[in-house]
Image 1 (cartoon, one colour):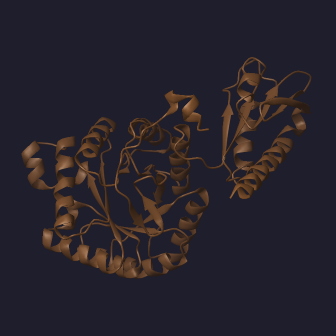
Image 2: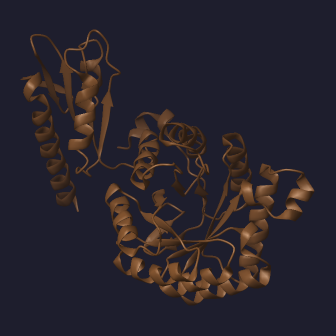
Image 3: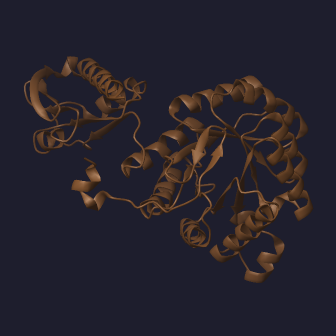
Length: 373
């Protein structure tokens, strides 16, 4: 039975969008919301870029975007695509020929910015290359690079201008009988971003790529993205997303998954429920959680773990988690398994023991899933 059936207030009705494919990853329709990030290495440094792509993939990225600013990057892209375990999206700005080269190099998707790519004739050539090489397209509208005629019309970047830009370019693609596209309307302003996406969602059935662009550093960018993307996802809007942070791309993937996990839209790895700690704690909660997050990164099986410092909320939280630990007295606490008190464990041995219990539970979940197939 779905948890949403017995707790209807958790239910999110996703917007109905048509489905496309980026390589072997379905986007839209009833497909899981895909998480992507972007490399920040020089694309011409193939080894460094491939290493960053692989790190992002191991963290859970479904897609990775790579910037293609020049011809040398186009040549490097071919090798990057060959080495990657996930589909590569080529980021194209200013020169339409880079889009053609990227499609020829094996990119699974071309991200083009309508305000930068040039006139319709050039866009048409990029569309032809995408079709010839089984490559999808993302129309990437950005508040910071809107077309001049739209800025003249509206006076400044605004949701209406962003949506009009996106719909204009949707028409160009459709006029060329090209339908393998998704679209984004990003701004660094959370209010503008949310308003633009809400208008866009009502105007098209195309898959929507979510993002608050140039969100900032790790902490501020995470907060802005959680607010902006979280409310849209809660409304059912969004088929793929990127959290844009001035940080390691792996952190973008982690934050993206945490946003989806908090809304019950994706499930991957251990969801740790922990208290902020206080004078009642029976062990160092903050240090323990930091250690467990690191020690449990390798576990991909969706499951829950509660780490609570005392008995005020600990037993109650443990009732709803696969594994739990609640601080007690005399240097030990209680281990909970499947919501029930199981046995005591000393604080000194607690971390190793919890890792062991989580790994054991993950193996059990995987075995049961395999048996059910």
